Image 1 (cartoon, rainbow, N blue to C red):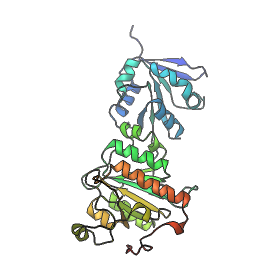
Image 2: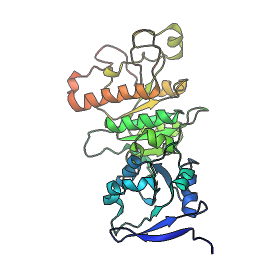
Image 3: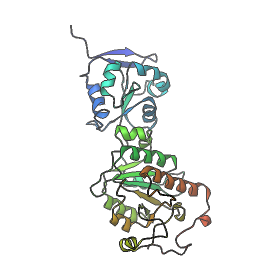
Image 4: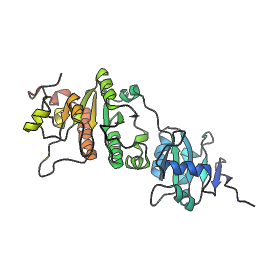
Length: 325
């Protein structure tokens, strides 16, 4: 007699769950697509793996399709119980063997717990909306940031320093890593599930809509430090030289543009931005990792927004530099 692919079991709270014994089970196929394949399911669910990420997904308020435990992951059930054992929760709790769990996992040493979660869909209006806790939106736009680790780290530090929304766009021939891929979600520690993330809008259209919405755009520049433009820089950029992070008033509605790791932002994007920013550095280091540079800028924004009165902020007009109209 053939062994059934799945069997029902009852948890201590009386909620029914399912044990899976076949690699061809439809649930394991969905988890394999979302985790090992790194793709959303046909219904738009993405995979998260590990107790911390599953916990973040459950707390995010986003729809959950299923939670899966391997044998070694059952030790995490008690930690997750308040989030998964309520009888009013509609998603199934699934159990399988460690061998079958390893077949769907994206990590080398899986913790034995995973979930399928549907990221929120963010409109432009939701992206620029000002939360009640702040006076003005603080946005970040990732344009051609290809490394999943950089994208995830930028989203994690953005959430830590009070960024209110993020957007991912292609830049020239360089796309931005999917903010909901397993690698990005791990690097972001689940922040991408909490932060409003706008995807699918072209960069020129997004910049045009930001201008209409009255949000100032700031281009992070890899070209020359403030106050020392080279002749080639003067030829390329007829506007004022890039500003240091503390010369920007981060208390107004602003959107920071972060470009490709190697090439930075396209010249036309830098030209169209309301201001360019360059982080002054000493020594022989020419540039910073995209995530490290973004973290410095986010910190300065948080410092100003949380501690400085407007009169303490140095602006281009205050230091005599021409400002872009």
